[in-house]
Length: 186
Image (tube, rainbow, N blue to C red; front, side, top):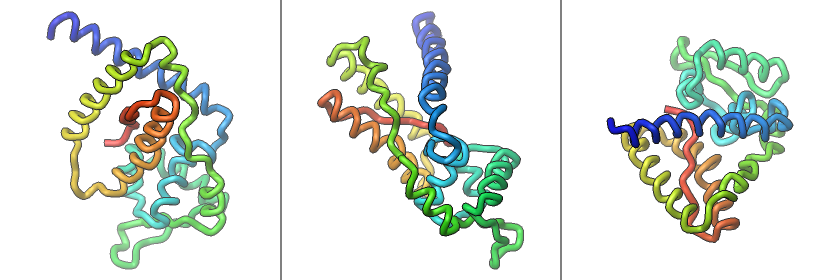
């Protein structure tokens, strides 16, 4: 790898860390349920799209360990927002179901992406267009590497929470075709 590519990789890793810090600062006032991209809010967001799902599928979609997911599910269950039931078809499978109370909380959640346009204030319109093109190409390459035809819920979730919202914000604020979002997952 040449030094320019190595520097670009280092910059991307550093940017990823800074974006994470930026999002955490912006999300700290959301609370455990109102952030559709983190923790319990993320689980409720998925259950809002699919009110019953296996715990194994949740692990996969959230890219979390079984232990971490079990901890979050325990909190949601103790608050009465979900129930966990053994599958009638296979006793090894545990299904997670959204309760009426959980559905009410999920419906009240604001699933919009916080304002992030200020990140682009240091760029002119042409630079934002170029960045959008670069991000689209990088995202497409990664999506091709992780393509899985049986992953419809994951695709819907990503579109719902990131791509659609970021595109709306980009069109509104930059007057362009938007830019693709990419957020975690496998």
